[in-house]
Image (cartoon, rainbow, N blue to C red; front, side, top):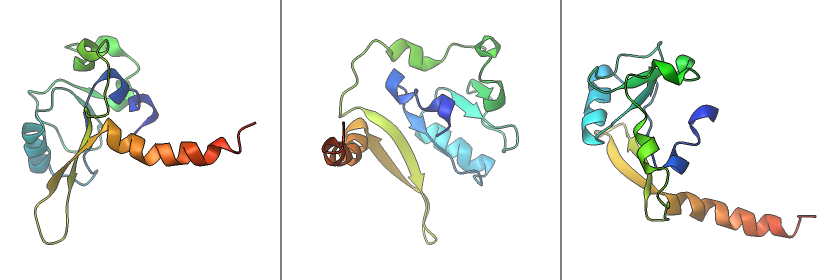
Length: 124
């Protein structure tokens, strides 16, 4: 996830990442399945469904170009819990259609907590 987008889960947004090689048809299916409300896009990638508000990553420093406010703003005051969804992934294998994997904040913390405990003895 790009440096500018890392704060989205902390604002309550659910991140749905797409592979660079995704087709416009697959992107449209993901957008519908995940009920995408806003998209950050790259101009070098296939178009995203035009009905979804979006902003090109190269323009993301200029929020005044947004036609609608970022949906994450309405969630920023709510407490984020371990059970809250943080990211939705669409995995793909060579023999089947991509499958949905839902990751919660707790899933990410489960990866970080052992590291935090292991580093504790080395802190000054």
